[in-house]
Length: 220
Image (tube, rainbow, N blue to C red; front, top):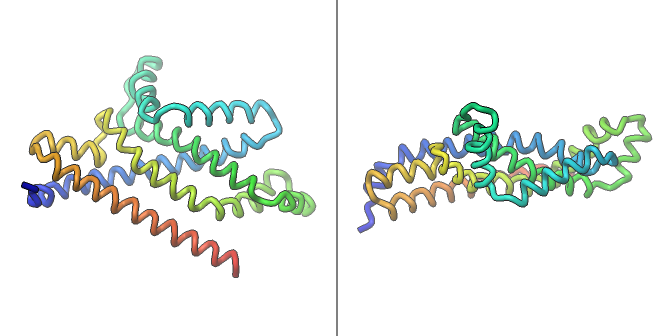
């Protein structure tokens, strides 16, 4: 029979795992935005020494599974550098690098969607290329890519479950540990799924609110 009491008793541990999942996702996407902004701009550069490495990075990361990237960071890299990497550091590093490649494409498309006349207007005002990007292009592009960034956050939230394979105790790993001692697979995985659903729906609502707020501000 479906044991509701087991779910209620497991909620404190699962809730802690959910908080850790949110933490690693927020940190990874924050770093991913920083990486993605730089890489996205580099992809649009007229200099081949910037554009080509950026394209290689994006193609490699998007063309390989996140799970393999986690294994490279946690297992292969320590063998190369001769020192152990903590699971949290490995998880954040792998997820940040992975997120950065997808965010780079989001920023690239967002920047390209801005009318070229905006750049010319900035230059006519005496702004440098960098100042034009910072003060004119990127703020406008950011408004347009809020939904895509929200989707990336949700995707990373779910993909972060893969870090459980290196023993990092986020929500999925907490569920595995509880099942190992209680054998309540149906109950615990149902609870884990519901917690993921609550987090993703909450983020979706927040993104919808931000999108509406920025669009309203733009119209006014």
